Length: 423
View (cartoon, rainbow, N blue to C red):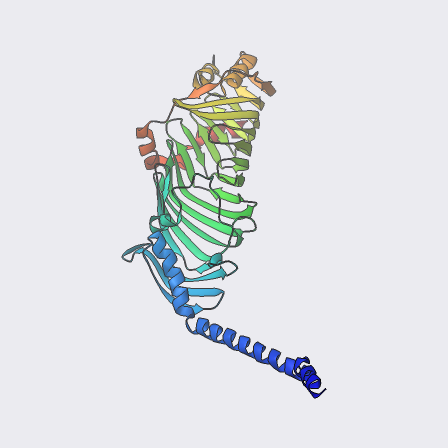
């Protein structure tokens, strides 16, 4: 029987205190191992972070110098960043903070915050180049352009962009997810901009930027001292464009409207006082359509003058190998119309021949021929053929900037002032 009792004792389960001791020893051992791992990772955090940053930059072939200042398990801060040739860097920054996600096997960047960023780039023949930063963009991908799904915070970020049309200075502050949620303020200075035979002087922009589901939206005023197009004889003094423009996620479509105001404008021999109105549009690089609702407080051409004049209707423009196809289907109205001379409208017909507004001008001339004064006139143009606008010559584009500054002084004169005073 004693043998049976011994067997029972040997086979009996361990006492509760024994099980608790084993569990405690196992937990303490595991905690010790984890503590050693954590201490090892913490003491080696700077080499790990440096290896991660350096490995990513080296894999892209980016030349970079920076100082690692603060390294945490999630956030890394580097300062005195220089990308590119130190003598002529493509980017510098006072500081950058990078948030990493360790959910997977390799760290991934989920947020970037930066202060005191200075960049330079070029836009030549339609190609944007940011120097050393170009290495961050994949040249093999055929997928449509899209912004990364990450948070970006910018404080006092500035950029100089040299283009075929002139130099642009940019300043951006903002914060949020680049795909959706980013909000920022963009300021731009454009001393002299020349494109397509037109020149803008002393241009500025102050725009609110918002990202919604990958689509950037720009809202705010764009101003200039003068806009002049030499080839077409168009000049605008003190133009202000209050913009509300939304681009597609792929940046290949635009929609919105522009509210235009100006001190005065001149198109060939026609002078407009305080022109303004709205132009709505929706289009792509192949074609843009929209609505126009424009007016001027007074209009004069030679011996023809009127008080408030309005142009409303639909338009569409599309590029062609030979220039630009443009079409306007709208209505033109004028108040207190006065004319002098034997045939004051003959020049108007010749002036607008071949232009998108030719049908309106012809009907205007036909309706008022032989009448010296009309209290109110309105005519709607029937849909007509497209009018092809010839391309601007390279010489006109090259010389447009030289005399763009003189636009404002050439837009008004004593003749118009006397006519309006007598009217």
